[in-house]
Image 1 (tube, rainbow, N blue to C red):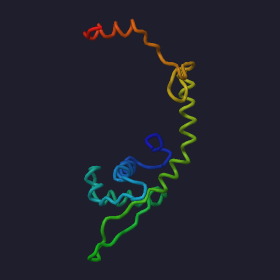
Image 2: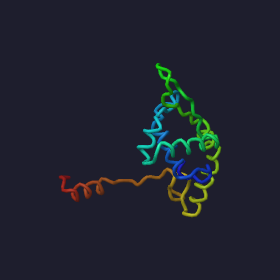
Image 3: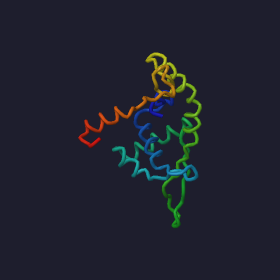
Image 4: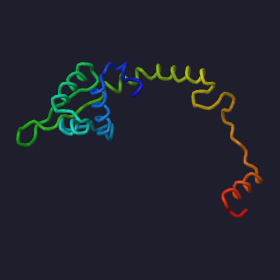
Amino acid sequence: MVRAQHRLGVNPTQFCIMVQLLEYWRTPERAPFPTKQQLADRIGVSQSTIQTNMRELEKAGLVRRQGHRTASGDWGANTYHLDGLVTRLAALEPEFEEEKQKRGAATGRNAEGQAQGTVGTQKQITPAACQRQRRYRGLRP
């Protein structure tokens, strides 16, 4: 998501809001429901800044708010559905993979970050090397 900030068309405050919502999102079945004040306190902005930027995230289709009433009939914390964000990031995944491949080709590494030609190879440790290592660490052979 960090590399997608510009492609998602969000400003730094909106990005911070999405990161905080993701932090509150514990399980896929239960959407996050922090209060505007909790989000504002975590980010260091006012509640009105949260409201303004949340509206923009809704217009962009990244977040969907669902209001809830408390038992007394007052409005409680919203539930924030992040399906739009998940869908947009999934659509960008092929671009991320392509960039990863290009970076690997430029640095001589494969998609897993290994140097070309070292796929599946491991350094063999001989008994003599093991003894040298133990002596170096001050352990008995």
